Length: 339
Image (cartoon, rainbow, N blue to C red):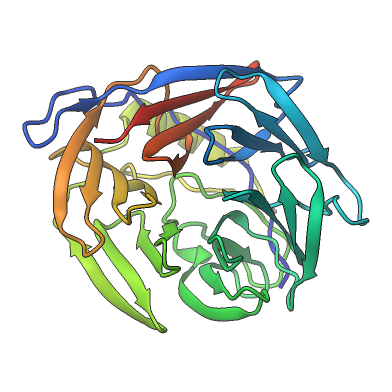
């Protein structure tokens, strides 16, 4: 599977900090900052049971472990094809006394000091954006497939073979002119995408970003957990004009999408207890929606934060929600205890 590359274009957004009678307001606090030199191009994070934070960079594929105060404890990994190094590190996942690391063709297992325990080759070599791993090594990710010019959500077994292509759409819907099989670079930021995570027992839960509907994979069949009406927030007219001007200056193989509205579902993460947390943006309400493992709405929480929640990378551990926020100068880790 050959994957097209993506270019990043962003739009500014102010997080809603209004109170909600259903649940209240969550106020993430800064845990620590990582300098640009130490946390260069930070891609993803995972948190161990002791509260230590693991972050990997997307330049040289080093994994760095920090304690809860931000002190650097270990650095391991790096670029290479020998055991303990990576050709294209895509995701990490701490579990118990181990850390799993996903490369396009292998899964490596380290102890929490960074010593390699095992390395397992996978059946397929696939490069995807921001995979989510289960603790047993299965994973899911959104992939842009150049052969078919589609954006697809793939669900992979522990051996790397595809259990199923969960959902997909033609890129031509948002990027007119993209042709299957050709080289193209796209801006997927405000086009339809997928939000997904695993339940503690390994079931994939997912949603498309443009609809407030949550589904669960049940042995290859999608079961609706939650479905509600929501009205998308219009994109600011000045930002639309600025993007249209930028779009007019692009030519193939560069393509970008100019949206009318923000995406409804911005994040989806699942806690160790099985609760599903969605960060949603709608005209009716903006904040964190909590669902039980069976899909029942159990609370809604506004978020008071001094960072852009949409561009943050989220994960959960130890019943806390963690936010990784990148800037050219540093990477900041924020967290909040979940109610």
